[in-house]
Amino acid sequence: MTINKMKFEIAMAREAVTKTEISKRAGVSRGRLNVILNSKNVTPIVAGRIATALNTDITEIERKENNL
Image 1 (cartoon, rainbow, N blue to C red):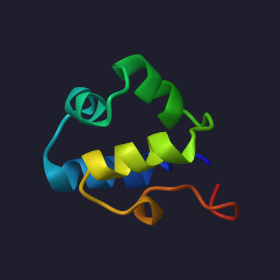
Image 2 (image 1 turned 180 degrees about the horizontal axis):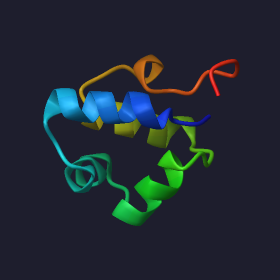
Image 3 (image 1 turned 135 degrees about the vertical axis):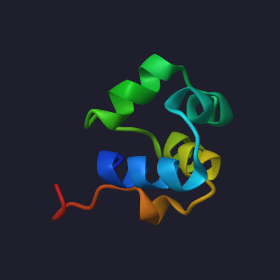
Image 4 (image 1 turned 180 degrees about the vertical axis):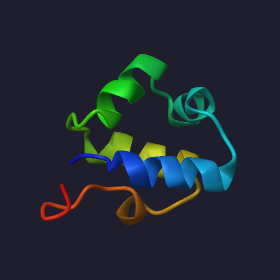
């Protein structure tokens, strides 16, 4: 599973938070969050924690197979 960076940034703007705040809420380091956003795989659990930190559903930020 991967996170769509543009969708992530839209959700982040909607919540008016920084990547640092999201990483704290999701329980991942800022460095790891950057790796995840740069097209690296993430476990469903961590993806869920990131979505929760953004107060959104995982389907709103996940990268779809045909939406690379």
